[in-house]
Image 1: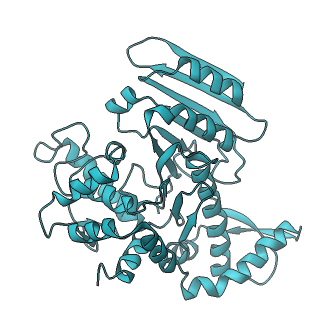
Image 2: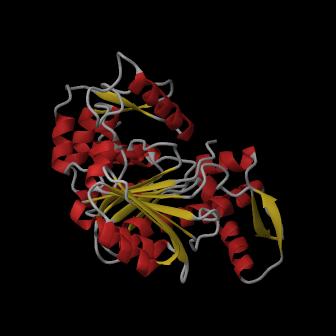
Image 3: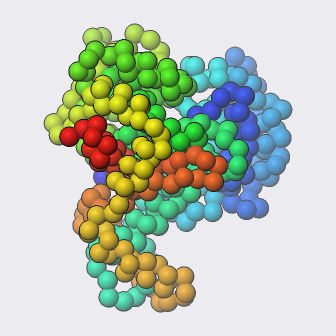
Length: 381
């Protein structure tokens, strides 16, 4: 299992960028905490660096100094127990900076590339099983991840961020291969369209994310009839594909012909990859958003194995909150990880700002959820 910490990406219009940054920082930082700030701008030798700065002062400094070619990094302590135990880092990139590098306008990282997932959890003493322990670990980590993604993309009533994504992979994958996505306008079929232009055309997700849904649909429609792409079956395969893409970007025969792509043409297939066709994506795009969301909600129903242990896991979580004695339990054994990989639930949430978040544990991807929804709608058999 990849031990990299989750990365959270958010896309927004240039005019909304600083407002989105300010809202996200205010939502994510530990109450009363201070930040370290670094800002640099392309084409200049100017560099702003400050340590121990209050949130409101960071926001004021950024608004005064930020330009199209700027990059700002803010490190801070956050309120989450595990994913932020080494601190969180919020990055913001100006439009000119983003044209040179395949970044999203906003990104949150966990400060470390390894060992951010807990090896041990303090679990209430009592009769339990590996499955119950794995369910507890899954619930706690997934809840933190979802709260951080909401803090980045939808911290308030405003919808400055249009699209967001969370992944434990080492680079931005197709959204259907991520572990969580966010859509401000609830048009969740964007996951499929954006994935298509990445998987079939080679576009870097961070570049294609700025396209409108109509423009993405036109790109899908432009593909040959019957065209299909392979979708990674698990997180390990996602990383394999990303490594192959990196190799393709350096190959004379496969390297992209423009700066906004990672490879030339469709991604190579791996054994056990699932199949997604042009016609399936177009059918999903033609489906009313409410119908698609309803199908995703039905498909998100937990499996029998999860339902069997969830009540007991919730009892242990509540017991800890009530002050019950605990003991340290290793939740990173092969049996724990396999249970999480196979049975952690999918969540489809309509947020207070009207946006929609699809999410699962970082050990899984969203593809199984999408695959079941497409079958339910009769788009695939």
